[in-house]
Length: 99
Image 1: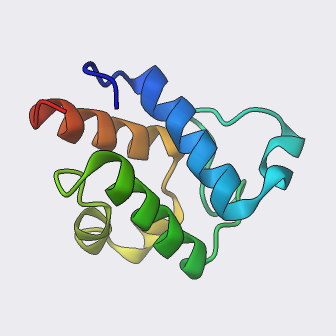
Image 2: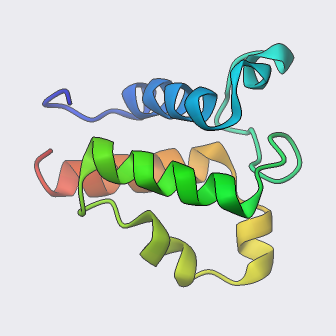
């Protein structure tokens, strides 16, 4: 993982992870953006969220606790979750840990 974790790097890595989880169909609608929603745009299912959380753990380690972060949210917040929100969370926590 790079020394400096920027939102641009996280977005690119997240797109790679999502292609692994969902498949190449992800890219049919164009590149992943900060405004892309997990529910409306990607239609991510709960099992895919689990796979994504495993990939985030492998990539960033325990300092990026995706499952814990989601657990603090209300259902409506999870449904409305965007890629940009996740990128911000990952970048802030990875940077805070010195990753």
